[in-house]
Image 1: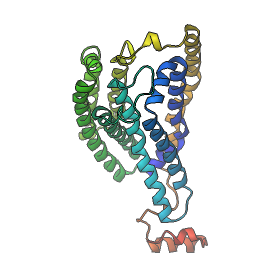
Image 2: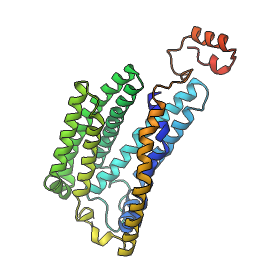
Image 3: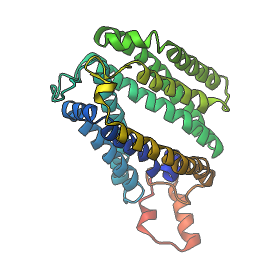
Image 4: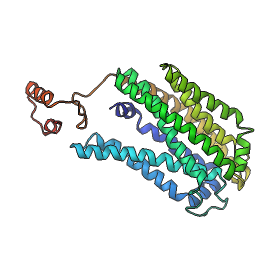
Length: 323
């Protein structure tokens, strides 16, 4: 219920970033877009499949009847939440390793079935779990659900530790397979690497000491610094060692038009998203359904019977809640 309460107000807005990145990539850098999608189409298709299944599992879990069906929808949501970040990370790792040729049409499997892409995929999964758990700690606290707050606190600590381990292993693999990006990352990108590490360690300390105020800024700072470092490391390449920015960029007129559209989008859409993310969860704080889900075993048979006798409701939904 905590995850559903947090996601429902902002679910559709979560896809804005994906649409924006795709549009900018194929408009501003069509050569790189073509190379990436003709080489890494297998992990990209699997990532998109995960996005579709995740949305389906989230939507149908609220509408299907019966314990088994709700569990199936929940399992679909959980599995797809692993699939999408893993294969997105494999794509990033394959690009960082220099496995994507500028002309595209690289090998469909060997380009991403290598240690570096797989480690980066695992790091994406752990990082997604870490930042989700951190945000759910705050949501549980605002909802007054101490049990779930403690639960997600433990999850955040475990996921943060695992993400840190994968980050170190990923750096070792990057040194072996993506030497150009590694050298840039430990020189030009070093301040961002240090910033990410400081934010990550700071978040763990705040979490262990029971603090809550700085949790989200520190968690977001650790992830943003990593993403920023990844963009700094390949410069001046779009695809490390195979395609430079100057060679893969669209004509000047196209880039200028995109910058104008981007500026308008920032002015119009960004404030709307901020309002949505700030106000959306607040409207759901402290609100709980009268009857929890069919999979909530805390509801006793006697409670169901009392509810039916007081309200006059005789519904198969109530019968399905009996443990």
